[in-house]
Image (tube, rainbow, N blue to C red; front, side):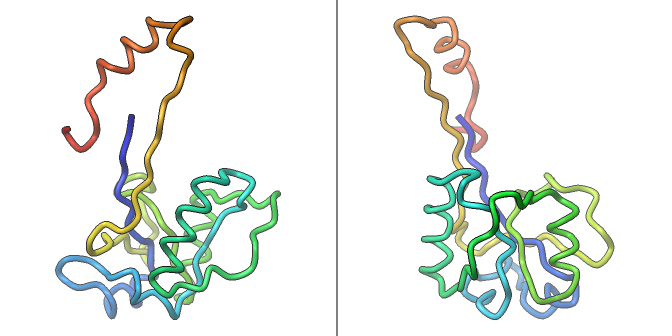
Length: 139
């Protein structure tokens, strides 16, 4: 139903050093700590995402405790020190603090997809509603 290309939140001085005209390459973030979320929050998404990060040389670090909430304030605080990065879609976390910059990832290696599933035999009306939506990428 939805497809979001994720970019990164970086401390602004780090962004000035790493971000080029097309964005930043995911493998250039290997010296930074990923601000992650607990696997229990979304096991399939966590596994897909950490697989992409690892394939680009990112050490995902120790598991995040189940009671850890990854809200905007947590991302901003973690990134502000210049030693971490967080993933986020463009414009979702606005306004950004002055010392935090969002940048696209070159080649769009991290894509969050949202799927909708329902029992078609019971709720055809839901199917018709979902089918009426346009995909975010225009296809």
